[in-house]
Image (cartoon, rainbow, N blue to C red; front, side, top):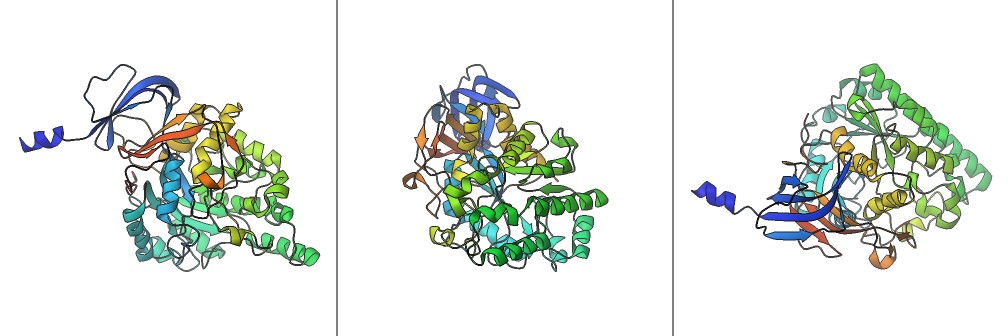
Length: 453
């Protein structure tokens, strides 16, 4: 009797008349959520008396984006951002799960420091979360303690990074790739190449290096040299390698075309590398200074094509905010990175409106494929039995990005002044309406991601 009453008390939410995009299909249908999970998906009317009814007529319903690369700056750098502020911006942007990088302060180089971040997120994350374990030249023993069922992966910086996180000793890299049995995510830029380029430009310009030189300093050669080394190590040791933020057309030759399920080596494309080009430095300056650098228009176009052709497997943001004041420094002082989670989906939908990607492919690369790439338990799809992480989008609701509507703690966006045709209307996280047309009715509903490994 008690169990029956408990079952009957489960909250029911019905989303009706939505244009559902899921698993390469688009259809008008209805979704019943019971508790935190989807219980029915149907083209036919679902007979029930829901506690909450959401009429989604005229709206697109997609699974929440899973962002496999963000920097939310907590602990240690919370003047720029924190888990609460940035996960709230992510929620408003339709991102319902994130994986955060270890180069916070202190760096997440021990299991204890890694767990500290989970404890912060437990109390403050508006969306679901996981955190990468960081690798360094001297913490292999700690890396190998990482639990593959509760941690998304191990992050290796094969290029410039924060603190003690540059892994540049060949023997250490060999051991990581040989002994780590979970996903290894790499930032690939060859440090000696970058340093040599930097020295040459400093000799030429002194401290006044033009921002337009950034893609020449953090060059195609630096990216390819490091990425090809990572691929070589992965093949040698049959490691599970995931190369982050591909920025050059040349690197695409390192990856195989085809379904993700057949791959041990996968690749990620970021929003900014599919939107901006070196032509934008003159106007945007250090606001689009990222590592790896935004490069030629031909690189940008080739990356988007590689997403469409299944050479690149997932889409992410590499959200990495800095304050306005920090970004206003000279080339050597202005840090790399920018905020993106609030505008990722609408930016990709702009590519859809311009005929450059289909809705089905966008959903595949931002949700389905990320869940598959990381073996995430019961997320990334609109499926019965899966967690209810859903986004309702109006494809015809134009708005202009401005400081007034930016939710990032840093207070700015590289998209300021851009008019997006689409807008995020509602976002459901674990069955609860977390975002509703500018309001946040149910705070901090995120859960720790788990993995089928």
